[in-house]
Image (cartoon, rainbow, N blue to C red):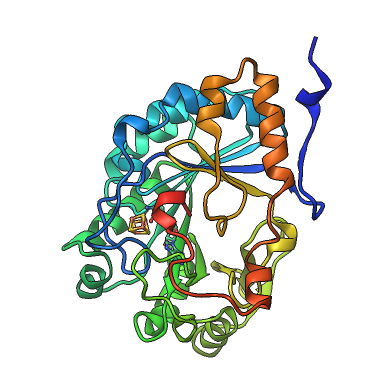
Length: 337
Ligand code: SAM
Ligand code: SF4
């Protein structure tokens, strides 16, 4: 018989219920995005400490019992972890999981798209910040990478995966390309999501002047392309979605800095070493892997998770209120975006 705890949702003290789990499968990456990962001085996780796919599967079955129905696989770069499609396949067999997606830089995706789709992947978020090869190299460190990412976007669409583009717009770096991104959405049918630059840079370059806001991005698009009309948004989705008046193209915004959405946050995260983070801005997280290896039953593990989620902090909204934003508050590639 199922014990009552198996049916309990993960609620925190602010009344939010966690339903979406982001799983970082590696802290490694084949790019070095200027807003994310430092070129040097990176302290890497010990590869022997990574959660195995079987451990991730076990964790997801537990979270599914606690109300999670949506999984996003992320990194570092998830496609550099060998046989990532095997993990997708395992997770797509978990009772209660309705959606499996992946966030990727797209560099290696083209050749993996078919296997990922066959394994049960439903959608991909592909990160792209520029349409210039020259700028691509300066922002990611990769020569000739733009063409590979564009080919991956095309391959993912052909494989019938739902495709969204994640674009971090930074003032003075790529804000002159907003219009081109909007046109790209209209031409290809992919949703383009503009993410405000967050102080989760391993590089220490963040400052508030670099944040190109949702408002500014919308103004550029309305001026140069067409007016945006808000769509019916799922409250828990951090992306605010808009269509164009002629219904061609969809634009999303993740205004983490200027309009933070902590009140409706339904996300929790585990990193590749099995630490649980209830908020992107939580420094240490909780050692879920240790509990997994040392507790007797799944119920004990569930109790631990429920206690951690209960303590979920209010989020970036309270950091902004107290005027405490500063560079490198956390490092995105170790937690997973
Ligand atoms: N490597 C994959 C990728 O780039 O899509 C997945 C991991 S990456 C950390 C996840 C997302 O976080 C990407 O869309 C990336 O652009 C975004 N990201 C990384 N650092 C960020 C920052 N400082 N502010 C806002 N978004 C950031
Ligand atoms: Fe790698 Fe993604 Fe970070 Fe870029 S944003 S360095 S691709 S983990």
